Image (cartoon, rainbow, N blue to C red; front, side, top):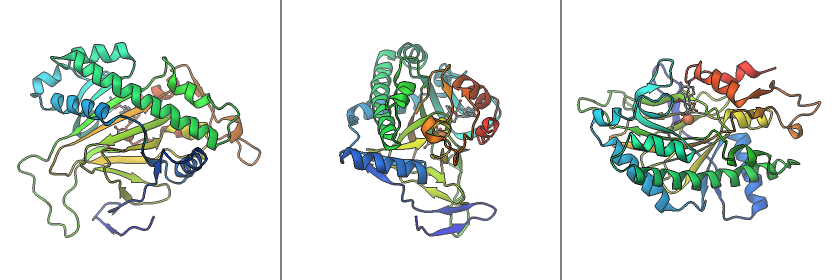
Amino acid sequence: MVVPSATRPGGKKITRAAAVPTIDLSMERSVIRERIVMACEDYGIFNVVNHGVSMDVVQRLERQGLEFFAKPPWEKQRAGPPRPFGYGCKNIGFNGDMGELEYLLLHTNPPSVTETSKSMSDDPASFSSAANDYIRAVTDLACELVDLVAEGLWLQEKSILNRLIGGADSDSVLRLNYYPPPPGDWEPSSSEYYPRERIGFGEHSDPQILTILRSNDIGGLQICLPDDERWVDVPPDPTGFYVMVGDVLQVLTNGRFVSVRHRAMANSVKPRLSTVYFAGPPLDAWIYPLPEMVSLKNPSLYVPFTWSDYKNAMHASRLGDRRLMFFKR
Ligand SMILES: C=C1C[C@]23C[C@@]1(O)CC[C@H]2[C@@]12CC[C@H](O)[C@@](C)(C(=O)O1)[C@H]2[C@@H]3C(=O)O
Ligand SMILES: O=C(O)CCC(=O)C(=O)O
Ligand SMILES: [Fe+2]
């Protein structure tokens, strides 16, 4: 990835363009699975196109999201605070993290979507139908992607990852993040190189197995690759999806895949809306390196834990903490 960069005073280097791999899901299966494995090893993130998710489904949820965030604050607050599901503004999690955003967090099981929709919309049926259709479509995509991963890694049990995220008991989450434009008195900084930047959602890795993210056509997502000090801009692709490796997939692959550190900036003049699906395992699922990923040369790096144990560690920690440290051998 050869990209021009410059250093912001007091900060990490920022790079202006990224070459995150794009994977066309209409290619031949043997090619797709190899490219996915390579992308997960080298970047922990890739873009998918020709993914089969209908743009109508995507746009219906985006419209519902924009309609919700355009409401006056007191109306939105009826759907909050997020404990852990519902509407949130600036506060992220329970341990003092803040960002320049508003968001909606929903558990993906249909009864939970229906319940959350009641407190957030005058037309809850339209919101829950848009959210459920989106969840169904991205869950299918996530299942297809982990099947390709399982094939690409030559796992014996081909459906092992699919079963973790495709069942009715999977603990997956849908998040809509709204990054409002800067306030009226905001002025670009005098820096020769960069305008003053506002962090919308701070640096972290996603805890689950796989994240499927898209946004409107406003940029903001940035990644930081291992052993690299630079933040790299990831261009928006409103018709594609970015797929990110989560902490649990890092453990299952015994560190062969790395969960990508990322953040979202909110320095645009236009509002940004991102729609993020986190494919998680059931609460009681045991997580440990898969047998094919462990050998004498590559001993197991992590102790076994349940997803529930990991969630406890996650809720007790700050956004940017490296929670996998607690589970290292
Ligand atoms: C500060 C926090 C917010 C978060 C829970 C946590 O304690 C640490 C992980 C955070 C994160 C990041 C990815 C997802 O946006 C999220 C829903 C998740 O599963 O882990 C958030 C959590 C949250 O906002 O509740
Ligand atoms: O809005 C984005 O692009 C990133 C959001 C994110 O990382 C998250 O919700 O976990
Ligand atoms: Fe994230």
